Image (cartoon, rainbow, N blue to C red; front, side, top):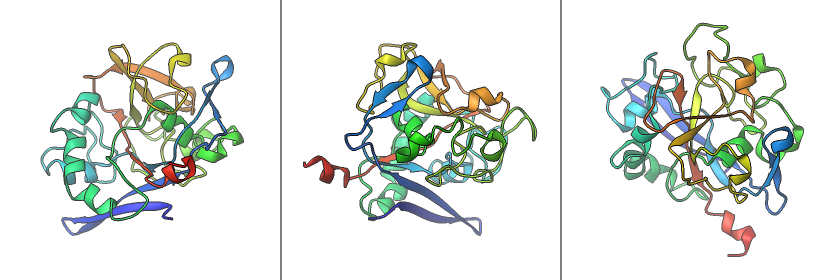
Length: 257
């Protein structure tokens, strides 16, 4: 069974790769997500998640060479200054991604299946905590030492940094703490007890969406695996990006379906 699925392409003579790593779900043993008194038991199904935030190389490959919204430009930098609406609207990034060669190539690599999408808030936090390694109890994604895993607090400039330069977490996932805030599927609810216990996204009602992970100019406290933030779905700036998830078609085998 594949642990990593990937898509490779060449642009202007440079090779690029988009990789997703398999995250084994809770399989009847709920994980604890949240912080302090807000800890909640949540079940999460198996899924794949991008090992890095979506880069500008992938965004321009999917959209167009002149369709890069980022403020700080570079192929290996996270794409940013993109709203939740721009990612999810009809004909937007996700539609183009799922209708084009990227998804087609990835679906030839079992057990990846379904459509690429934003992660639910529960999937995001579970992956940030290391999936099945969540009981390690790490404060940041991959370490209790924020400097080992995160670009934060303007310590290397008030701008994004190339992906995958800091240490990964237990699953080989980079930049889930710091660099850019990451959009989730969910409508934001201030009451974390309303977040679905089955790992799916909270669908509302509500006008704002969820950001996770902190960014290059935030304090360390914003880069923890449990920090939640809300913002309008139409909003965008140079510290907001996203990463992608994909269902695991083999997940049905352990559920007996």
